Amino acid sequence: MLTPTPPRDGNRPKPPVHRPGRVSGCAAVAWVLLAGLVGALVLTVTAGSLTGDFSALIRWYAVSWVLFGAAVWALRRVPYRQAVFLLLAGAVAVPATGLLAPPTTSTDSYRYVWDGRVQAAGVSPYEHAPGDPALAGLRDPWLFPTGAACHHPYRYPVHDPEGCTRINRPAVHTIYPPLAEAYFLVVHLLSPEESRYKPLQVGGALLALATSLVLLRALRRSRRGPVLAACWAWCPAVPLEAVSNAHADVLAVLLAVLGLTVVARRRAGGGALLGAAIAVKFLPALAVPGALSGLLSRRAPMRDAAAVLGAAALVVGIAYLPYALATGAGSVLGYLFGYLDEEGYAASGGGRYALLRLAVPDAAAGPVALAAVAVTALFVLRRGDPERPWRGALTVTGAAFLAFTPGYPWYALLLVALVALDGRWEWLGVPVASTAAYLGVDDGTAAYAVAAGVALAGAAVRAAGRRS
Figure 1: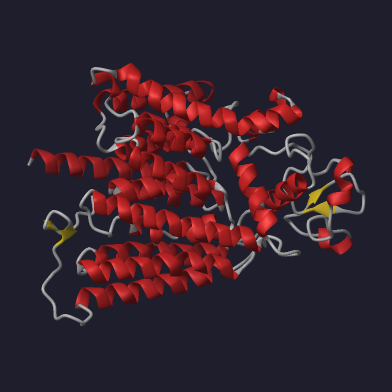
Figure 2 (figure 1 turned 90 degrees about the vertical axis):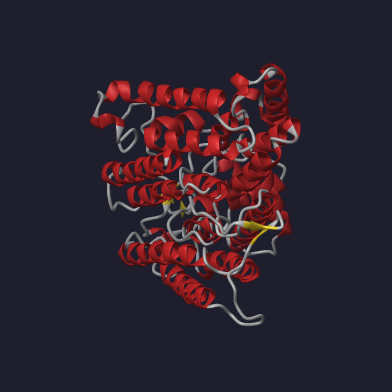
């Protein structure tokens, strides 16, 4: 764990001795490293925009991760007030780099734009696919180009023989849960005409900053320094995935962090926030066992479980209700099951279950992965710390990533935020591994193997430190 300076007056970490009004030497080093990180991220984001050649982007992204690690390490010795100022400066500057170019490595934000437009026209996104001729009146030349503009590696065919679309999987219904769809609609309604993807990027930057502020407040309440918040605020994955690619996962992360920071004191309130996170993206469901940490060792487990799970289920149900009434309950899951099959989760193929397939037959990889996550969740329910629910959430989420080895790096934004809450920095190897798999540096096996090794080594060092 990145250990902050011991607290003073039961509130703030004690700063090193320095002259008032002067920037300490450690702070100067941290400023230089932060400036280098911002510069490297600018070069990363502007290296290429959906060109298919990510070689320059990969090089600068790797440099960004090295500078990120060095900057966070330097922040450990910075006096408290200067560290907070430094953190907030980086929390603004780092995400802002994602605003400098169109979506860099993903076309998902184009679906977000379309879903917002469709809803504003009074049509449920679960009812028609983007390529459906019934919605031809909502098309524009930007999302649905024709002619030479279709000769691009990130254009997808539609029914029009002369046209194409920027929207991936145009023949299938949306996969996104209802609060994500509500977010797309709100962004659309607040956006100027012809603004395209930029409002979503701005929304991602604001949500990333809000998450940094929530993390900083939570760390202050638990008498920990701001250095841990930098694990999210300065992480290179945030400007690339939350801002440049504008993935809605950042909204789910903010809600999950809020839920985990309040659930120990307000069970129903924390459960409701976790339910809202799940109604944005399904992945935060992995944080629910953490919210119930130590449940099976308490005297009234059913009361606590009912408060958290009941509130979460109620929020998810209410969020889905308007769409279910409009299009039918069977349609609101959209392309979810087709997506799971397409990504190889049903067949145990491709890059999924990469680590498990080294030890078990392909056919057994899926069941073994589910069993591994279930056993981890049971451990958290029995032995987890109810005062630190984020620790159990990180344990279950990290185990799920290593078991299923997903190839989409924006999924790992949740894990990055959980690292910032808990401090077990060794889990940051997972977002690096998922990016390597996504950009074709590795099929996922070697990268995730390294990430698993780092996570296990960190756990071993931590356990040895507790014994000594």
